[in-house]
Length: 219
Image (cartoon, rainbow, N blue to C red; front, top):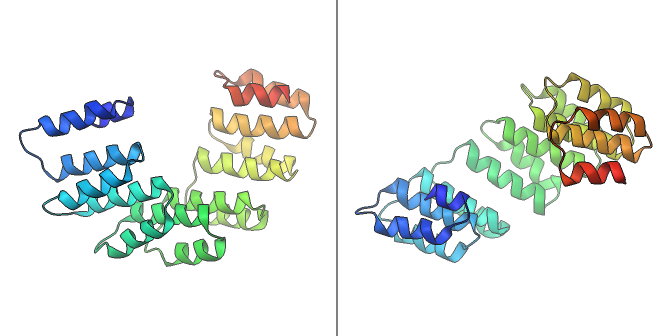
């Protein structure tokens, strides 16, 4: 079912589920995830309610479905009803808070989380970067126990957006590898601040160039 959903064949995924001789929690949750992927929230809720029992995977699938739909209130309601939660559940709701609420809501929720992983740290990092709070961006980045290319690209985007090319360049050069996201962020920053030759250097090192990359060079 998951393979069909990833290829965009929702009808085949549903057909596979109903052709199975019996269903367990894994297959039920997989179908909820299929509906979630295609934002068919009513069907996801109906499947959840039809399950003989619910476990953390099932609840997490329903939570992801409402989060995918952008319905913060219902996502929060599902979260509150859950008898047990893992870091994925917390990160899902944290992402919703950063999308639809101010950091006045998101940061206290982050602080109350029982644990943090790289996803939750990156969500908070991105939220501060989007509003231009570079002091908090740097503070979060420095206290993160680990960071990845997503973290680095977020830092680069935040710094270049507000004209701090030197700091962005320092982060860029410290990355263990340069992927398309990081390169595009740095290239865009150079291009927007008139550093055409530096932008061209980054452009030339990229093995794959997407439409965003080309647009950045042409801007």
